[in-house]
Length: 412
Image (cartoon, rainbow, N blue to C red; front, side, top):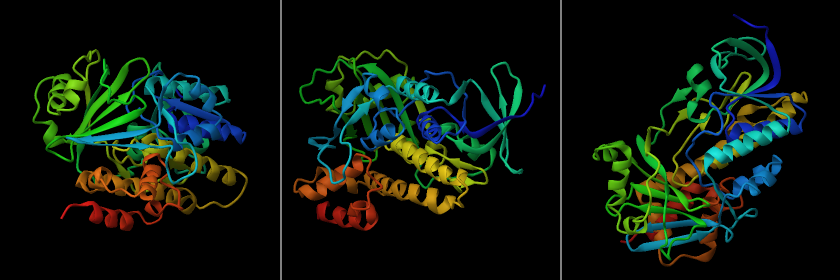
């Protein structure tokens, strides 16, 4: 049975990091904000290692105190290992101004903290409400939503933000999806009680370990507070398909191939079944359209190697909220040049580094013994999430500077 038409200033699809931060920023402007979220929170999500740049957006959204007080694992950098080679980046020692530390978070708890903060700031969040149809043909977008009882209702919004992450609601319903230019990769991952007592393991850093024989296969070890960690492997699907058994058995077999990881995790308790996601890299024809914009992973997801996902989500929320502020004030705004283009500048910087990582060039750079301190600080800034800082040559002209550095650091 159809109910009467509901109205709101901004409808946000998804209560994850992008949606919650966007809601908080829009509430600061006095907008009536409604978030519809398909899942019930807290719910499991992957992508636990934040970047320092993201702290500025939490601060801007008025959510920083809640995150600081939640007791997450402190993070000050990243460590990289490949065979006998090992290097670390301290994000406090970087070219760009701004935060140099952040947290490593269980996303179920982190996302719930942010969504609860969005509610505290005046946004309405409806859990287990699912968007089933979208109509952008009228003056304002209309969305059909199914509630937990299976009943449908319609919302008309002044504007719509898709923060549905890997659900990619609007790209699917409006046929916006285009293939990513990355090969089809997958990840197998779990949370474990890690039991790590290895003196060389720094719980304040994410550890990225490269497979001893395949430079495009890598593992993440993300320590949490309380002696647990997130553990996963990323590879092209043809590599993952070589391993048989349950996802947990496959992940254990791949971990055992790495001489540095296997002894470090020998006391681990594998108490959570591993799971796999495949083909997560995605792209769209446009990040905006009549009455809507796509935030974070709903628009484009690159790859998890540099933990850029939440930072891009927050950046998109901040840009979209600022563009909407001007639009609602009666200004003529250009969503392409005021939202999509600036967002993609940073995304494209991350993309160049991701491509260089898998080709092996960036690995030659970070493990090179003769590193210049200032260049190292520029690289550290990008690894810390400052991919929009135009004072950094590796942001301003990423591909050219990266190619030159690869050439200098590659033997022969």
